[in-house]
Length: 110
Image (cartoon, rainbow, N blue to C red; front, side):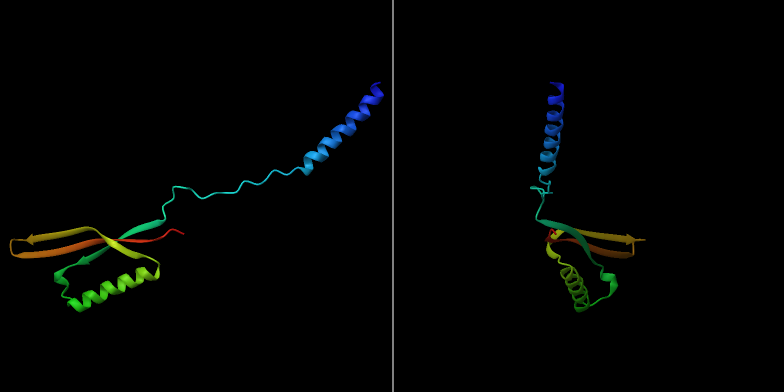
């Protein structure tokens, strides 16, 4: 009786191995996060110092050049985040003024 069971067990186990080799488990694929924002942001400064002795046209040209460089990289200005004005008096006679605006840019997330 053992002679009949042993070959049956061997054939059965080989059959199970062959069937398990044929069955494929589907691969897991990465998914995007559901909470990922659609935009990415960055902030860049725009400064103004009256002591630079630039004309309004020269200053406007500099700002336009900066905005166009950012636009080439896909950034669009959203608005001003912070404006800071600094007034310093040195020795009671010389007063300097410095203004800095921080502008926020955004572009679609890649």
